[in-house]
Length: 355
Ligand SMILES: Nc1ncnc2c1ncn2[C@@H]1O[C@H](COP(=O)(O)OP(=O)(O)O)[C@@H](O)[C@H]1O
Ligand SMILES: [Mg+2]
Image (cartoon, rainbow, N blue to C red; front, side, top):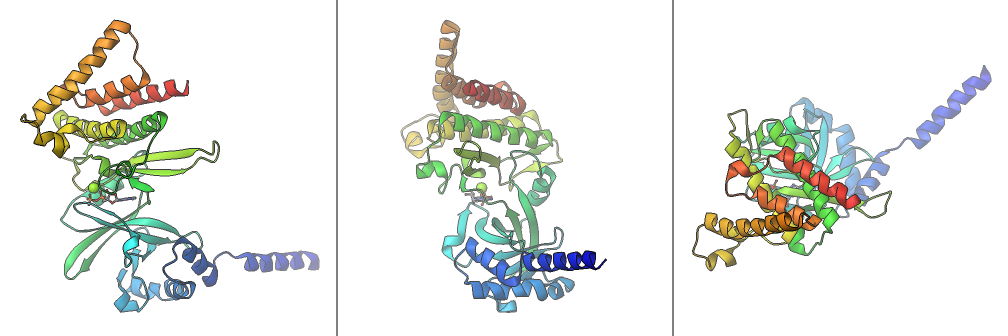
């Protein structure tokens, strides 16, 4: 009996000793994620979250600016998911990106010693259904991962924020995008990215959602190290649902416009250049309408590849990849394949590459 009691005592003492996440340990773990805020300052923040935050939550105060708490960072709480965030937006280098609507900065998703840096996308609310739509699509492959969303008032204006997984290096295209910063992808990587994005688009359309703003700047990539091959592992997702619609009658023409836009994003990925009808240099020297440019370029190249196919009966994987993109850009929207057919096409290409 005494032996058992002693063992229990010993175990509980050991558990106490090994308890991860003393305030000090948490502060160090968060400091390791970012070096702006010192361990001592982080300790103040962590102590606040662990001891005082609940009194604000009880009063339904969820957005706590620095003036209110005198802490070095603003604190935000989402009562729906019961998650807490420490903002890092004060320093310019903590900016992740920005588009027409949102300002995206790094934020710490507070989870004790398992805290992580996430992307905080802040925008002035204009009644878009972005949060509802992303929530509706959560957990599906190829869709941006959202951890929490909040709404609060700032200078008497409603603000909406989305806390998402931080995709690194981030957008595929756009000013800060990796393709515009000299990042190179191999053919299998490009096919893999296309597969991921088409899986995402298929999921979006299958759930009755029209994305409405597919661009390379709204496709995010995350590159990590593959623990098995030691090579790089790439995940691609569709983000920015700020112009998305659902619940209304979405006609096949509208879905086909998402396909066309994805075709433009994949064109950028494949050729490493913007589609001509969106590039200013080209349009400056071309008198025709965008439709005429599409006709002249897309149709011409598609016919070339199709001709070769009918003569030789074989196409290289590159040509098949190109042909699929050129079909997505078909002038006649009824001839653009749907996202399921496209996804399957890219899966076949990916399997061929694996041999
Ligand atoms: N979760 C994220 N991970 C990495 N980068 C992101 C993330 N969310 C947004 N970004 C970057 O911020 C930019 C703007 O975000 P986005 O959601 O597209 O807003 P906007 O409506 O302003 O276009 C993106 O193009 C991308 O570069
Ligand atoms: Mg965007």
